Length: 233
Image (tube, rainbow, N blue to C red; front, side):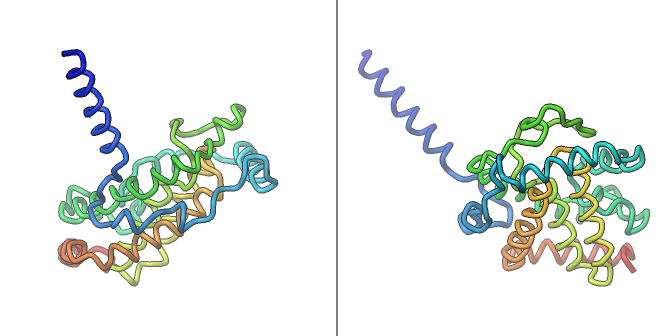
C-alpha cells in the first residue's frame, strides 16, 4: 500500500510539474513564437554603467516630479486602453459606452502577461526599489521583476491597435502611450531600458496578432462600434 501511495504521489508531482512547464495560452498571440529572451537583448547588468545611470535618473526624477505629474502617473496605474488614452478621444471613449471595444481590448491586453512574464522570470532584473531601497515610489510597489515592463507594453500595444482603427489619431495615441510608459520611470517602479524594451515587445505582438483571423474579426467589430459612436472623427 505505501508503494501505491508513493507511486501515486510521484505521478501527481510529475503531472503538476508538466503543467507548470506549459506556457500560458494567449488569446491572440502564439506564445511559442514570441520568446522575448531570444528576440530582445538582455537588460543591463546590475553593476553596469548604464544601470547606474538609469538609477541616477530615477533619483533625479524623485526630486523634480511635480504633484500634478505624480497624479497622472497614479492614474496611469490602471492597465486599460481607456487609461492609456486618458480622455484624448473625447468623453464618449469609455468602457460603459463602448462595451464591444472594451471587451476586445481586454482580450488583447491580457496577452501581455503571457508574453512578458516568462521573460521577466528568466532575466530576473530587480525593480529599482528592490535594488536600491532608497528609491521613493509614488505608485504601488511590485514584487515582480522589471525587464521588460508589462505596464509599458500595455500602453504601446494599445496605441498600435487603436491606431490601426483610428489612423488619423496615431500621433496623439502614441504620445499617450509614451506618457503612460514614462509614468513608470517617473515613479521609480521601472528603469528606462525596461520601458524602451516594451516598445519592441508591443511591436512584435501587434505584428503577430494582426495575422490572427479571430483577432481580425473582433477588431472589425470594435472598429465599427467606434465609427458608430463617432470616436476620433
